[in-house]
Image (spheres, protein in one colour):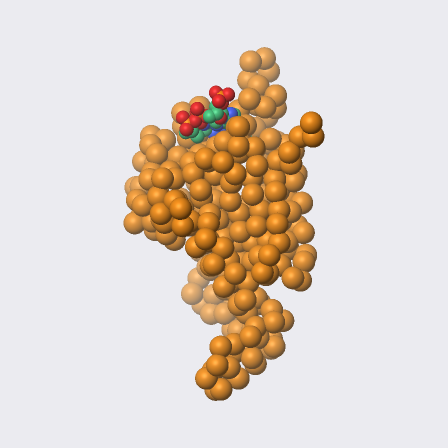
Length: 264
Ligand code: LHQ
């Protein structure tokens, strides 16, 4: 019997769908899964045909975070170096998602716990099944919210809610996550994937450079003054204005027809 790959990847309609695939472990991360995901994201970043990425999980969970049964996590003898694990695997992954010059949509199909929750939140647009929940599980095992969680959470939902979620590890239902502004939408379970694919396809047909610059600008904004940021907007708009897609967008508007963006 050949072992199934820990991450699946499929291309259709300009969208690279990447599926975490260790369902027996609720798609918890081990080294193999990290390396596979990194490879698929790098390929998606490089491919001219890929103009949007859709990340989801196989089975009943999105991702339960770090695989706590992995030998690297064994705290029985000498304490493991979790800083090394973050530096080597999680931090590059979060940076890779944020730097990808294409929209990354996350379809949270079930529970997202620990680093699994924060990997989802690092994506550009997060949709979740109504039955899904987000759990900052770290405090239950004596850890801190990683994979960008302690940075993202207070920015997305404010310090009061962020601290309470992280300190209590209380599960947050998808609908509340949407109501709080932690994610974009909670959707009925049976329509999640269809809606996520429709959205991904729509973005894959968009003006790719403009979308990438929009993502970058919003991510940078938190660390800049308005004055600095106005300069960044000027430069980005200058770049967007030089694309074929800008020309096509204006022509389509004038001709009262849908734009056919090429992504160039
Ligand atoms: C798992 C896991 C899992 C292994 C479920 N590992 N097997 C940490 C350290 C180092 C550096 C990097 O950063 C991190 C970040 C982290 O992510 S730390 C946080 C790790 N995650 C958690 O603490 C979550 C642990 N899991 C849970 O709390 C529950 O499984 C949730 C709430 C996700 C789901 O609960 P249930 O729906 O009741 O499912 P279950 O608990 O029965 O799990 C099903 C199976 O999956 C079970 O295995 P079994 O052989 O009994 O069927 C679990 O052991 C396994 N599993 N999460 N992270």
